Length: 214
Figure 1 (cartoon, one colour):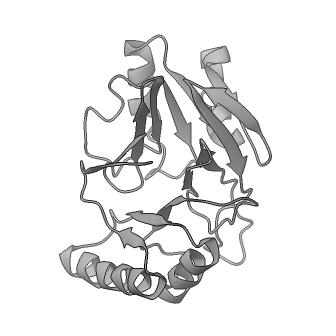
Figure 2: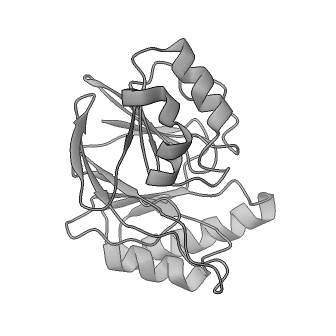
């Protein structure tokens, strides 16, 4: 399987059977992010993860494209019928040759006075976990973690704790589109430090950079 990091939290996964795209939101500048995709997975409705107009345009251009999403996102696309499926914690499905397990229920807390919105993380082929905007720990090993690098809902210490608890062999940074160059350098330093502690491959991929997963 090939993992390609795109802008912010968008990740593209490809293998012989098909291509998945996760969270092509408003901070994903690559215009071809959805080109050739068989399915799109959306973790939650925030603009940096879900760009409704862009997704509708892609579905109009590609009749085979299907969407799997949290219940709120699915409800916004309900007029597209069976091409959109609502998924939630505990679901398991096979899409475009990928086995997908859904883990997680809530977005991390932003305003303590406001209930969290739904957030669904996706474990793909028992290999790659994309948590969306949550620090969800799946009940099974995660060889490759899409690691949130910076967010209004996360402290640096929580990033360290999360990657330590998951203990993946590989971690590639997502959720970095809100940082300027200085912020990226600071975040990369902390991720490198976490990698050195664990003796594992934890790093930030540049937008458009790909890695081949075992």
